[in-house]
Image 1 (cartoon, rainbow, N blue to C red):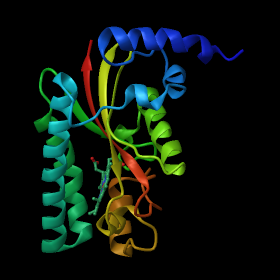
Image 2 (cartoon, protein in one colour; image 1 turned 180 degrees about the horizontal axis):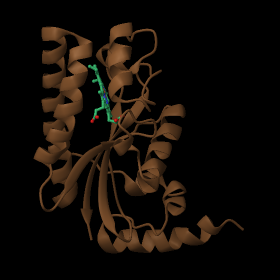
Image 3 (cartoon, rainbow, N blue to C red; image 1 turned 90 degrees about the vertical axis):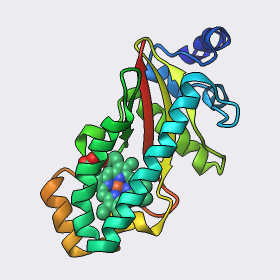
Length: 203
Ligand code: HEC
């Protein structure tokens, strides 16, 4: 019999105790009931609520900077803004209690590669998207840390200027290649899952 079957009562018991489910391994997380992780932003409290507020602020900041830079000087220049501004902003929005960052299963910046727990969540979201089910923020624990994650979809054609296929202009492509020789973050379409915002605090 599949080991995950034995894990279910254990996960349910923990979820009941601490409010969010706890996982020993990424494998366990990948076979979890999505509903047990999902957070309703309207009723989120504590660390989950704080994290969701920070994601909103981060996202607003980033989009403003990106749109401004593209308008002013074009996409190849905006890449420079993005590569400097995003890490700066990750730092700005983090504090001694939480670290805020972005991850992807196909990162541009190799430092943004999802760890195995984050990757399991990306996969859960993707399989729901394929089944045309809603996705949203999740909240869970591992032995080491507490995580809140929010999906980042490719929400607009703007993203395709740097993450699409034929939409990427040659000069943009060249600028990306120079800064990110191991880039995996192209070939997306509007509506795809690009990655996630993560808020993490050590336990
Ligand atoms: C001007 C080019 C440009 C545009 C437009 C752009 N990005 Fe990016 N994106 C980048 C660069 C450059 C990085 C790497 C930044 C870094 O090093 O931190 C990146 C990184 C990311 C990451 C972090 C994971 C990774 O791959 O490193 C996510 C998530 C992301 N972009 C999503 C989006 C979304 C969603 C949009 C549309 C709203 C968008 N991007 C528009 C250039 C762009």
